[in-house]
Amino acid sequence: MSAIGELRTLRRTGRGRLSPAQKEAEAKERRRDSRAALVFLAPWLVGLFGITVGPVLASLYLAFTDYNLLQDPNFVGLENVQRMLGDERLGRSLAATLTYVVVSVPIQLVVALALAYLLDRGIRGLAFYRSVLYLPSLLGASVAIAVLWRLVFGGEGLVNAFLGLFGITGPAWVAEPETALGTLIVLHVWTFGAPMVIFLAGLRQIPRQYYDAAATDGANRWQQLRSITLPLLSPIIFFNLVLGLIGTFQSFTQAYIVSNGSGGPTDSTLFFSLYLYQEGFAGFRMGYASALAWLLLLIIGAFTALNFWASKYWVFYDD
Amino acid sequence: MTTETLATPDPTIDPAAEPGDRPLTVTQRRRRPRILAHVGLILVAVVMLYPLLWMVTSSLRPNDQIFTHPGLFVDTFDLSHYPDGWNALSKPFGSYLLNSVVVVLGSVVGNLVSCSMAAYAFARLKFRAKTVAFAAMLLTIMLPVHVLIIPQYVLFAQLGWINTYLPLIVPKLLATDAFFVFLMVQFVRGIPRELDEAARIDGAGHARIFLQVILPLMVPALATTTIFTFIWTWNDFFSQLIFVTDPDLYTVPVALRQFIDAQSQSDFGALFAMSVVSLVPVFLVFLFGQRFLLRGIATTGGK
Image 1: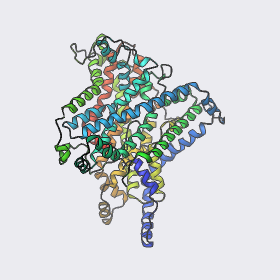
Image 2 (image 1 turned 135 degrees about the horizontal axis):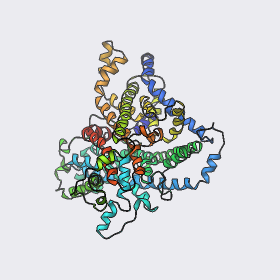
Image 3 (image 1 turned 90 degrees about the vertical axis):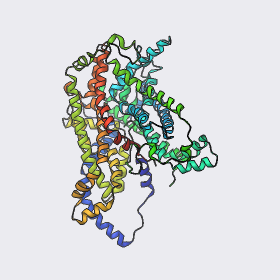
């Protein structure tokens, strides 16, 4: 069961009804275990409060201050929010990030699903294909690949060298405001191997008898895909979608390297986290950057909540 | 997290198994020759690998040929880019590799120790507020690093940890990579409880059950954790860029970034060469640890 599934179950299962004797035994075991649990969980608890919950609350406070790392923070009320409303770079950053997320996540998942479906049909050389297609998703987040992308899509890069063979003079893809974001979307789609492997595992769990029964009843491939594969795979599609969105909203390295830290040309690749980095760690406007961080958290939270709400209408759980 | 996933080692399915392991059924026996599928797959595979192969061959070409040759065939091998790139920055590239190795090793050890301990508690112990704690752990998996990074920076700055590797390693020692806690919880749940009971009857306490019964049996989960921690830490740019600003302490990603600035925009061969060098460890881990990677990532089990 995935983390998302766990959260669903936790929400649904309350404490079961127990007999007094069972309760007594349970209480005894709990007393015995509690001290051990404290020891085993000690590092995690320190981490949870010290470098997760504490910082989350601290950044909420800093979001309402003018903190600049050198002087003590002053409470400034909603000044940072006001500033956001008039911040044109923030607008362009949100546009770039949302476009990137909304375009690249679905494309990546469709490609991943299509190839997983192809590989699941009992094809020879499965292990080879799977390895080759999976490898880019391990390398994709690295600086080296972002550097490579800069050169592949540069004015004199690989892509244009190919186009040149057909007499086409391509633009400097990474340097044009219209195409720079597109190169990053291509890079994200290129790393479809990870969701593909998850889809592949999910496809394997669908009992073959379902397909046999459907085939006996005269259902063709397309009908089988629509009525068996997609419904049974929908929890995994949902899982990949939720995690894909959360992860993609936080993309940083690719945009940083391809634009050499600027988010350019004309802020077209100014991912939210890159803008946050510029404000906080280059401009030392830590108060404003904290406000940005909370805006990001709220946006991701809203997207995730929307997803969970919508999942009622298309995700099929057979439990 | 980027495209990383929450995985569940499920012993009943082996993602590395071949389709032939599964008994053939009616639909499969009726399959037609799959030449079209193979042609399509090979095309996709070539497109996927092409940029990587081009990077390797470009690192072996004289600079003036790199961008005029989109092909993969190299006729004049020029190995000089490797020593050139190795010595292009203020320190030899080997020292950045070593720095990255230190950070990676610290992170791996930290994750193995702290996450396995937490996982044992969540999977085997009964304690107050367990449901709440477990839910909190799951939620932290999805928390964006950005809401933490500024206060963490302030905290680590006050501790005098900026320009050390402590901000990169200490959080791992405190099980903040909750993803791995979850992965291990799932794994421990699959270990029969009778083994714990038997050890308890023999007088073993939780410490001994954990160390002598559970840990040896969860080696596959530990291997998956090791491999993913290695790759993600090796590739991690955001936190290394923020916490390590002293050029002597640069790790590989930050050093490579420096390369783009330092190189006059002409020595692309050297840039390619060091990019290749920086990817070799990840590639090797992929090659030898693939089974654990796939097991970890594939058996997510949905739902």
